[in-house]
Image (cartoon, rainbow, N blue to C red; front, side):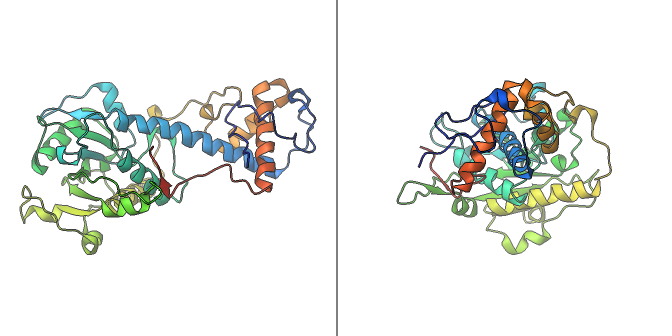
Length: 338
């Protein structure tokens, strides 16, 4: 079955598709008087969210493909790298034991597991603005901190440099300390749902609760804890350190962030974190909401090739969906990295 391509922003409709009903045969024939019902508006909103998600995914993946390194006990990080900490509730530290034996590889499976689980924790509709994500990953080199206490000192040093306005960034960290090759199915695919459950992560509280709505603890996680197996953590300190599945770790960090957002929902956003209100011709990156995007697209579309093509593309996708073709897959349960 031949599927129409996804239409993004000013993308073109598939030339082999039959023109949608009730729409004249050329892009120039689209005008403000063309009947545009609620289905078209819904489709344009769907395009907005998919476009935002695709740009977001590429941007976040860069943090993982070109992972920043912690090379010393008290690392000094470039200002541009520190900006990547904005709107991240924690830092994910990859110890040497969690890194692939292949130096040129990147933790694609771990990223995919976290990415999918993070979306699910937000009911597949997270806020994709301003660089928000589960965590910023950092790779610890052999010359960097090697124990939990040393990582905590390096983390405090990084937070002091970042001057982040997210208290949760200072309150906890996530440490990955084991490398697991993925388990492949018969068809060579990888079940991310299985992988995120069988992989573990170490959650560590720093003891810094200033600015939080309430103190953070692991009481709700004790029943899901796994053997800690960390000789660098004493029995006294173990109250602030816990090993859980990666799935549980993502859920915990998301719920902590959501708790803080609810508690401070009336606080004003930092002006530096707000997006530009300027609009470009049919571009979903220059508007602040799906509703703004739809209104921008439907504002005199006949005077803009990109707008008219976007409308035609949305109508083609609507027709394809009515034929039973699923052109948008918002998440995946099986993943083949090859």
